[in-house]
Image 1 (cartoon, rainbow, N blue to C red):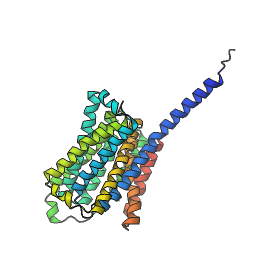
Image 2: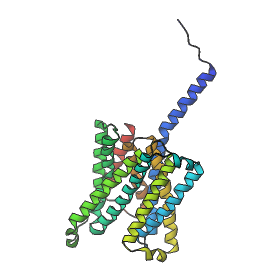
Image 3: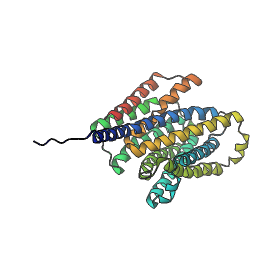
Length: 314
């Protein structure tokens, strides 16, 4: 019988490599959690910044901060030289991902303008489920019976979290248009994650985020120009401008974590974890804005969180 002798140096090398692999497996979960946290903080900071400021203008200004933040990260990580090595296909998917985000925002705000918010938001939230289904079709990420059950929990939880209000007659006449735009908003939001997943394959996530954000910036300001709200930029109060800027930094951190997580982990799990930002938002809204939850909303949060948690364990 032959006995294979492994040197201590070789053993230590194998142990070190195994440790790196294990840390790499768990890092994408931490990035996804970081994305969720910063996204939750973004919502609170943004709400403080749009008390008197138009939301479209605030979004456009916040995107400038995100863009600067993204490219600074590219410079700090030294990944700018990789820009010339990006393939045409990768660049195409990054641009498409940015356009999908911009289109989602345009449709979302248009739907909110004509429809009741308690009708529009549930449809927009369905992007989580759509992303999982699209990941199954285009990225060939498996959908087991357990994962399908988690999808149902997330869907039911999202529906319960929405507090319904009566819709006035003047809103009812717009039901056709706002419904279509709300559905398109959810579809484009789902495509953003899928296209981003494909686009950042083989390149640094920071560089991919910076390129995508450049496209989003153009879409955000296009919305402001189309609605002729450029004059409102000079009317923003300094306090609200500060909150808008801080929300931009939080958004930038969230996006960088999000796309780093997508680069290393499955989209069908990363996206639901990112959606847990609602827990952060609810916690801070309770503390800062004294907002209360109905029993129905609490039940929805429990189901939504349970479905997301179980999905990470599958």
